[in-house]
Image (cartoon, rainbow, N blue to C red; front, side, top):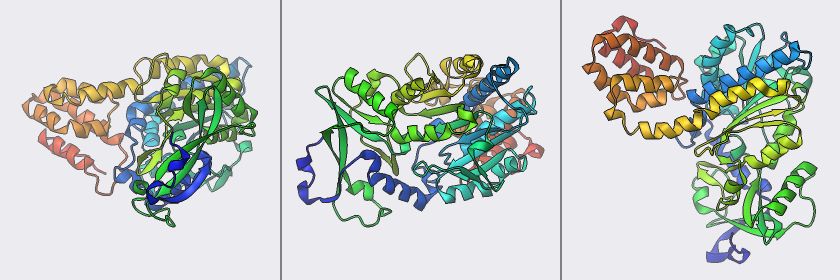
Length: 475
């Protein structure tokens, strides 16, 4: 934390002074960035998204959705729950960005759904973001259009700063709470870290609001100007709270618990994220399954040892998510929190059940244990970091096995392409069928986001290397 007297040092220009973090101009700068660059934020490799939008993550979410539906159907059969098989099951992804998580999910989930006892229940997956250009990208993407034509996928704009019902772009209808009678499923990966939140400090046992001031080396009339993040400086000042901070008593209760129990520390509070959760509780008769993955803190020890709540800049910016506060909010609403008993180092993967929980979430809990606790996305990412530096020491069986464990991850295929090609050239033809099936699965699981994407080209090069000219893949 910096003393306020430093605010105008070194002839810097004050851009704003003593603002709540959630009301700061930094969120306007972030919005302007996304509205200016659109898909370019990911196409240029500026924003990270792979860790939360890969096939392993999609597979975990498939298992969790199936578990939740099993609970809903069984609870209805027992007379303890209400689930209408003639009404759609809506799955909405918030802040979907590239659309890759949805594509991975639908590619894995839908064939299983059609072969399951639930095939008669209509599925409606809705991709959302707040940027118009991103929604247009989805609408024009041929691989996403295939799902639209099946009646499974639609698109909508959703703005966490302006909460209102979705207007489905393909169906041309507005999705009101009355339209969603079955429980609502939400995906919120890399969502809570990029929407407004507040900052607080506990000093000598006293809870203080952590007000933000921003200075720059020059006036900043254009929030979209290049290099703005290089010029600005963030300065906080702690001011003791004089009254309840929020209109929602539950938010204030969580803060009061921090003041009473935590040592001196600085922490963030996901007020806008909680506002979003309250908004979506109006749907599905208050019954929600929320699946979320992000960098953040779930336990007090990790929450109180973070150094600060400064934004992490990467083109736009993001912040660590205070999942501990979200957990407390869910508990206050008699909901259920599914989290791993072990510390997740790279990525927190959490499931929330709000409203009436069918069968006490028995099937959902078991799915969470199988898909997240026992070797989930965070574990796979940790192992991946160790394996990817060993490709040159792996044989063909090991490389193919790793790709199968990744659920046909195209990013990892690119990484090991050279070693895989070398192994193919040295292998017996008996391996070629397995290699070919792996290549087909990788291509079918992949959503290109660049016009000049070369994945199909390098896949076909490998197919030709095996002499399978007639089996080359097409767009």
